[in-house]
Length: 105
Image (cartoon, rainbow, N blue to C red):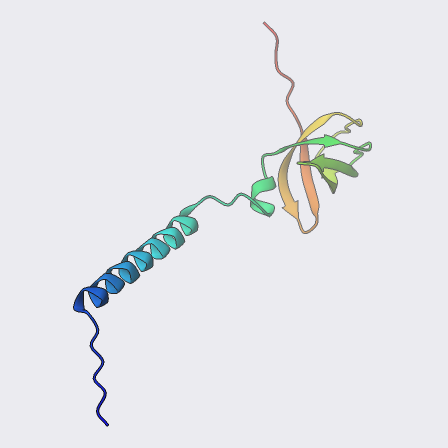
């Protein structure tokens, strides 16, 4: 028994084009995603403004982006509600500095 399978050449070409275009779009999306700036994790915390939840003298708790973190103030003392800037991350502890007050003219 000899069975011949005839597949239209246009169908093969069309499927190949769709496959190649899909592959190109997936590769483009992967490359684009790899080039994006980090928006989560430790790197994103540096430079963020935090609010002291407890007295920082020099250790205490701060609130950053809705999350409570243990923190250590690099110098001085900060009262609850005072804003500080995250300067460094040491494991699960943030190192913070007092936010400079804006001068009024």
